[in-house]
Length: 334
Image (cartoon, rainbow, N blue to C red):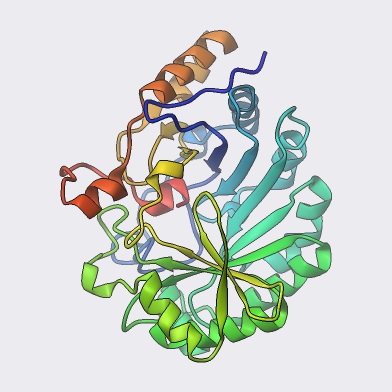
């Protein structure tokens, strides 16, 4: 029986982001800075990760509550062994209409075809620069841009939908705003600019480093005239004039979208988070590994969502946000 549920602010549950691993091959400053996530950093042992069977079980429950979209994240999800096996199971779940994956693209060239064959619909590729030296600097591992560009090409060739996400940090990769727009326009790929966000405690966030949607649009309009398309649940969407190619803005800093947020996030170790900025997770893994039935698990999740009142970005904008713990972006995949 499907029970579409709503939270205390009348927001339905439609999207579930699933982190399949907390490890990543890169050390981007805005997400997993190398000075914190060093070579001896203790990531989760395999036994603490949710198994594929556990992920599928939970996904079926979430689908019964109204979830129609799944997004696999990390860390870097392509580091999870046999990920296509999981995808092939998730696509069979009744009610799931769309399965995507967020990746840095480094391993995508080799895996794109198999991901598509398994049932993946689309990929969101995180890319902060087309300048090779700047990209090496920002990813903290000295990896050049070539494998990512090849990964984008492989994803398109395989028939996957492709979006590119660019986190913009003022005076760091601001110079790449126009080159990225040009590249994505020429490739017919939707580009989404993401305002540098105050997620977690390790990325050194300061408001002075944020380029807002308004500032980004002013830079863009000088070279690439765009017009408003429509508003999605999260992204403010535009398109290049005279084309059908879209671009978007994730504006959690300058224009809150809390009122339309329909997302829940499942961490690699099985904790459920009801907001990207809320560090309080709810341990589902222990319940999965107990003798709790699916009906009992379902009732527990319903109770959590019914009580959800998260609106961090609204409160930040109003100056009423309370100090709280935050979960790291790398742990729940953004």
